[in-house]
Image 1 (cartoon, rainbow, N blue to C red):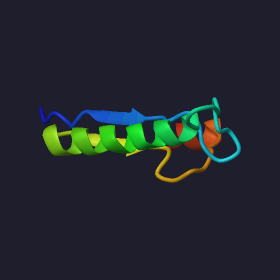
Image 2: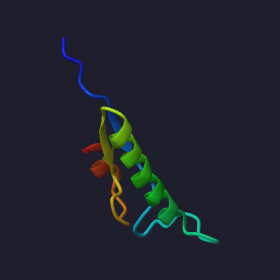
Image 3: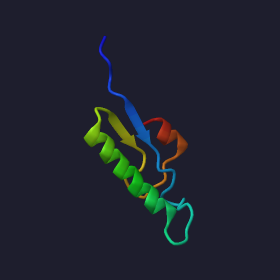
Amino acid sequence: MTMSKPRIFLDAGHGGADSGAVGYVVEAEDTIKTVKYMAECFRDNYECEVYADTSADSLATITARANK
């Protein structure tokens, strides 16, 4: 039996029209940076498949997220 690689899906939760909290920083900008950093760390250090719904500042619908 062959084991498949674990799949990790990272969801920033903000982007596009949904900026999240705005104050000292814009939450969407920080969450997008964090998702990109985490994806890179997983890819570099583990044998896994990494998917992220936010590679740019856009808001994906729930349906689009689920279909990835």
